[in-house]
Image (cartoon, rainbow, N blue to C red; front, top):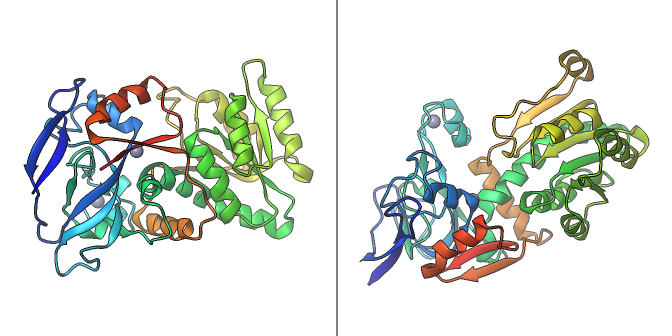
Length: 360
Ligand SMILES: [Zn+2]
Ligand SMILES: [Zn+2]
């Protein structure tokens, strides 16, 4: 028996298809026969070495994996035949952040990241050195959708979780309150649905984007009001329209910025209620500074949370939520393993609609 692996042999060049022996499980680890592997922008950054060697040459990229355990350390909780996804952010396992499952914030900065620093999903089989990073997937969750959960799914889920306590607090007084989600792309669409599932009933979910088509999909995903922040819309107009859409409070009790450029950051600060929660997720602002007047920021008593992916316990909660069947994954297209590099190029060129996954 052999496995086919698409290996990164040279940065910026097509992967090489290799025929290899099927590996066996190391002590404490497992081997998963991949069924689906999501193709993500992060893979394009790794393939082009934009993370300065974080993804080493000879590596198999693909961090969004769903498959079946074919070999596992007998002491592990899961068993051969279990369907699983992979929590791909292994850390040192010993620091206080790793202990609570926040391995993305590992204090020793250890990165055992399957599909980036170590072999991942663009292969028939993947070795997972620590079987504790596997999460069982129930039959009610489609495996092509399941593979998306450890990346875009968990990021949006964690973002919504970060605003839940604040929103619950406001909603105790009156359910007539609203949250604002900026960005109606892939993360935003997950976000709208998670907000509808996790926030108290009656809380309105507003979605803002520069693209009318994306706003239409946000509406279809269940958002209560779509706010067009296109080119002709200045800050004052955008802020006034958002506040009006927030109901009697006239301000959002929480907001998630899936875009996070200086303009969206500034608008959110103006739309948030006193004591509101500002969740920062997007990376598009890069190193650009946001101009936030400092004293008004203090007086507004805003909270802020930065979200990068989510924790292993959250991934388990998310799988349980998906099993209830009320959240729809984005449209998914399937591609053969041999085409993965071409799919990555299409993704970079903005030609992929919805999510592309490799079907193994
Ligand atoms: Zn990803
Ligand atoms: Zn650690």
